[in-house]
Image (cartoon, rainbow, N blue to C red; front, top):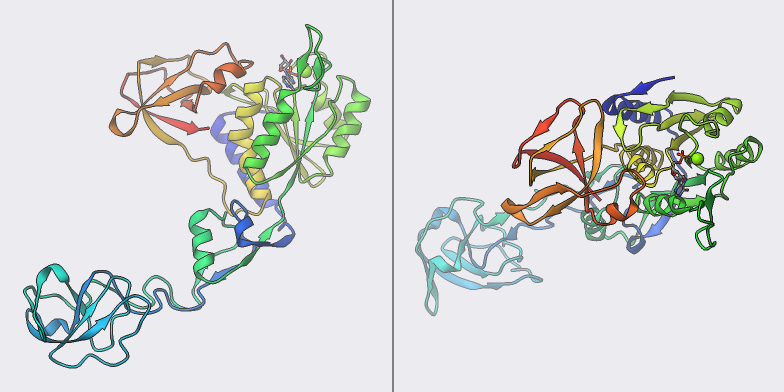
Length: 399
Ligand code: AMP
Ligand code: MG
């Protein structure tokens, strides 16, 4: 079985999930409910944008060739009206931002560069043809496809759909993601745990992460460290579009998950990644369904979801791409680690602009949920380098 570098494991997940993806079912949702969903249709402009030559300044619509100079004032046009006739030679029309430029005019002189009297206006500066005008159709032509299927609908896409007059939109059904926690020590969160028992926090963090990623979590009962019941629950989980298991994938005597999956005929692509936290991460497929065996330590579970399962979920959901986007920040203090593992360390990004710095927060290892609540990001530490200085740029993953 294979232990891969972080980059190789990422590639394996992206490549395999992309290549085996089937288009999800489609449903129609109201535009107000569409945020975060993945577009299932091509969206074409219903008319030219802008729909007319639009003035971008308050001033005078003119023929550029007649400026600078004194022109006859021929009325006014504001946003929401039309001038109604062609601008004639020797004329200027008072125009407001957002108003349609009359035909015959080819530029707008800013009001700041004009002096008005009763019947004429003195335009002190010359303008070039096209100045202070956004030409009709220059943002999008009628019929032009502005959004392709597979795009996630963020607020800019929602604005576009609203602008095109779309009250509803076709999107892919949210993928169902089964969440199966394993471990004899794991109990329900409202139970009173014995001192040696642990509440099932992973089911809740994963459900929250799945939801944030646009999926529909299906939380299964806790699987004990016993093969028959574990197999039953895994079979239930494989009905969903993606199965996430937590725990039971290390090398211990009671880590049964891989064995049970193998009995079910699963194919494993890797069962270790050179990362911390999350090294024993398992990725495979059983029948048509992909699964991740996420290590059970809470930070391992959360981090491996964010850096692996989330992209797989995006692709299964119908997204055309699912890159992991790091941002960069300067280190607040010198930093070193032992190379060999790519680390994702709980970190605090503080300050703004040029003064922003990132610092790892103190943590007790991959069980330390308390530390993660004090972090707002993960510091991404390269496996290939040992030391960094205060002020060096480092990739981070905002949480
Ligand atoms: P495992 O990956 O099964 O070896 O579990 C590693 C550690 O994660 C152990 O300390 C477990 O108690 C803890 N753990 C496992 N499953 C969960 C869970 N569902 N919620 C919270 N902690 C867990
Ligand atoms: Mg366990």
